[in-house]
Length: 244
Image (tube, rainbow, N blue to C red; front, side):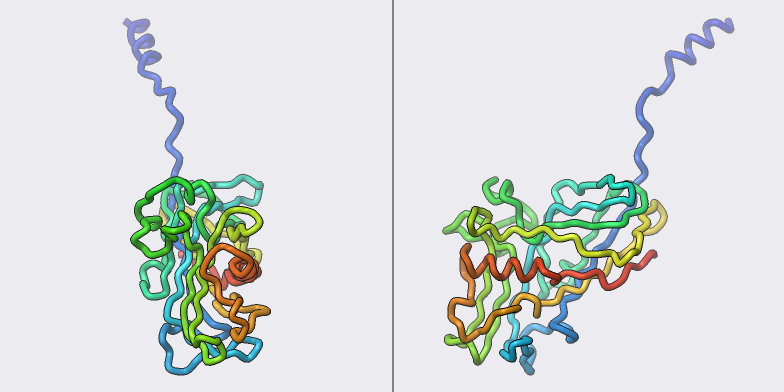
């Protein structure tokens, strides 16, 4: 009788791996222009560090391929992480990352734009749906960042910065790793931390004068690469982290 019970117990042994506990992390994007909040169609223009004045009518960009790093060097790569952030849509500025393995994370890396694989993958859905007006039909590629506005200093009075392109020598894909300023993000099952970013639009215009007609960017090319270099050089900074 005893032998039968023991055999039955061995046969019922569960050899599957224990389920990984997961949590949620929110990334909140606060758009600013220098020390001021970004406001679309604001009555009073903003001023660049070079003294040019401008107003903003559109500010959109993609965040993709998000990776979280632990102190021991291991990484969690969020699958299919593509987010379209629009200043005009408040909810889009809050990126919720779910099913993250619980742990203590000390670094974050993400791409500004859309990687080359997705650029050539054909019609997409969700954030990558071409109906979001962030896709060049004529060029079969995504606009990584779109800023539109006006400036009295611009020859046509309009500003159009549509930055994209993934082929050399005009590859505008940029990957950044903003510092967490020594903080650790604790992802747990019972609370969801929040990483609050400042996204400074003024950084786009470093070294650019609007009177130069070539400063505008409508396609992949030297102007797009220059803007991409600018937004990779500190446009995204971590202002603070809520433990929640």
